[in-house]
Every structure is written in structure tokens, then in C-alpha cells.
Length: 223
Image (cartoon, rainbow, N blue to C red; front, side, top):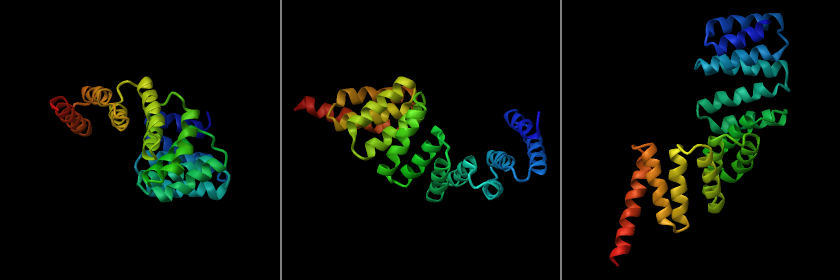
């Protein structure tokens, strides 16, 4: 097994010191090959050392400007530090360089979502759902984006999809309840607030929403 694959195996086994040694050897043997730098960057990011990780990803790009996963790694460095605007460009570059994977589209969508650029985020999150149709969390974030631009019917359909994939997703139940309130369906909304609280008893938003709906329904019955 070569040093690169050995390092990856060590990483999977959580033997980080051995992984670092293997990646160092891989870089020494092939200093003009970006994968050694990229994997070392991934290791450092995993070990919460973003500053050094950034340098390794930048070195990989210096060696090969078409190394798509190096741009993706660099985007993750900034994303982990909540520098969403800074993360946006390398994620875009990763896709432009050919990284046709759901994670790339998802992370770019999230950086835009967290900058409240909802309309820009939508096509990337949609593409991520197409590439990972069974990933509940990707569908959930897409649903959140749809809700933010008032595409309520589409958001409701997407939250139903999330629950179909993972019925224990408390935030999906809560946000589906909110969307149903917009459609003036408080009884259905209440069921999802209750489900959210059943899954996560300390879900404060669901608890507050449930109390508000109960109060409104009580007033309606008295009138």
C-alpha cells in the first residue's frame, strides 16, 4: 500500500499521528502531486487546526490549479470558522473545476443560505438533493430555503419528504407545522408540533408554537 492510501486508512482508524507521517512521506515522494497536501489538509481540519489546513490546501492549488477537492477543502476551512462569504468562492471553484458531488453543491448552498441569499442558494441545494436523494438533512435545508422565499407549498412537500426519509427529524416536523399555519391548517400544524416535542421534549420553538395554536383554537371555540 502506498503512503497516501496508508494515511487515509490511518485516518479512518483515528490514528492521526500515523496518518500525518504517511502523508508527509507521500508529499516528500511526490511534491508536485496535490493529493498529499489535500489529505494532510483534511487531517488538520479534522484535528481542528484550520490555519495549517488552509496552508496545505493552498499549496495543493499552487501545485495543481485544477485540483477541485483542494478548493472544496479550502471552502470547508472558512465554513468551519463561519466565514461564509469567504467560503463561497472556493466552493464555487470546486464545482467549476468539476467536483460534481452533492457535498460541494450543499456546502455552497449553505454558505449562501447563512448569508440570507436565499434565491441564490436554491439551485445549489436543489442540485444537492438530486445528487443525494436519500439525504434527509439536504432536503431539510432546501425546504428551509423554499420557506424563506415564500414557496410554502413546495416547502411543505419538501418537509414531508424529509419526514419520509427520517420521521425522527424534530426540526422538519416543527417547520412543517409552521408552514401549515401559513396555509391556515392549525390542526395539522398542531400534530407536527406535538411530534417535534415527542422527539425532542426541549424543542422550545415547537413548545411555544404549540401553546400559541392551543390558545388560538381555544379562543375560536369560545366565540
